[in-house]
Image 1 (tube, rainbow, N blue to C red):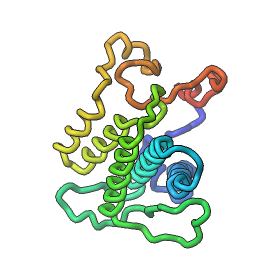
Image 2 (image 1 turned 45 degrees about the horizontal axis):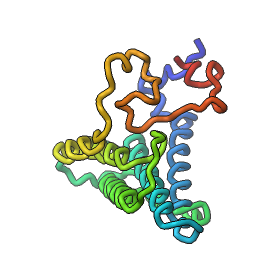
Image 3 (image 1 turned 45 degrees about the vertical axis):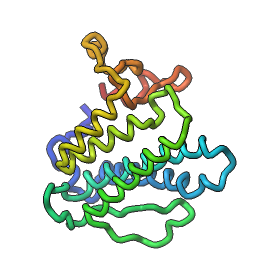
Length: 215
């Protein structure tokens, strides 16, 4: 009908420097990173218990790692297991909104993945140092961080590490039943979901939403 995403499926969209999708995706993930940096760089100076701050800090480090991970896959040559991976990757941004003055050079793919792993390690450490837990699957838990670690190691071809972290991610989450799968992958409480977005009644747009339209 409207022609949405035709060029994407034809493998043409990403080759265009003027593509709004390429530009918006780039801005989307760097916005996540900058917002995470605002928390990481200031949370130690705000009111609250260390217990609470460690939980928030752990979630912020996860989001920074998540943003860089998505960007390096979309805007750089892929990671090649067993090689130097000194090909240009993306800009590693550790600055917040108060410190975004100078343009930064792109780091290598290997350097980007090193930063991703460092942030995920800090995320786990911070979450482990906090007794704050949430039953809401939209919050970042240790299971979610372990799951992202598994994905990173799959991307790098480090199979044993991927297995270890995938097993840790699944702890406490039985596989989704066949009956739940047939409900259409939209049941937030399905046992297999480790990280998911829950649309609450006063925020639902239903048939006017992008998701309803595209489906």
